[in-house]
Length: 214
Image 1 (spheres, rainbow, N blue to C red):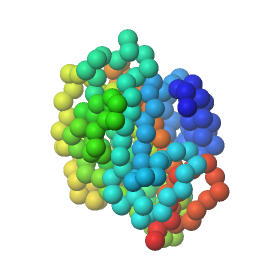
Image 2: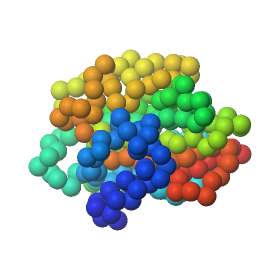
Image 3: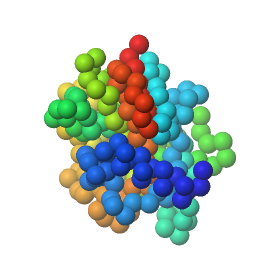
Image 4: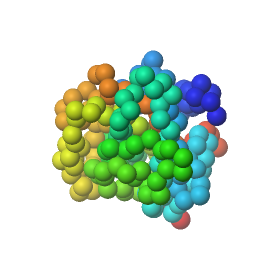
């Protein structure tokens, strides 16, 4: 898929899912155009708009890869990236009082060249350990966002900059902010690509990534 086709499909799906406009509007600017295409897969099954998963398929961290940005002049040769997996529907879509839930944060990711790396973190540093999605049995399906940001070269992040690992401390995460700074508002902190999907107890017939607990 070309970058232009990817951008069009992504924009349409976010509108269809009521994410933009909606809870992801602060993370995805109206002028957003992806500059690369992130590939995310759980085992041999790729995450794409419309893919359905069971919760059991998401217990282990997915593989991540992406090529260098299409506009080489816009991204430094040594650019690195931050990847975030977050849930805007915690604890339930009808009462998202704990949004955004922080499931996974990796810093220092590098673009894939050729076959890329074998590990899921693509050589990056894990700031928040992976916690697989687990919607409550009585919850409607949750929407999940897989976000990729280019990291400013001068910014060094630690685990405490994004939050501690304890389960209850993962709630009310602000993906658009790191260390109190507006992450999406400054040069060098652009959103480069994202994936999204639904994971929940009931599989829905919609353009989404869904999960049914086993």
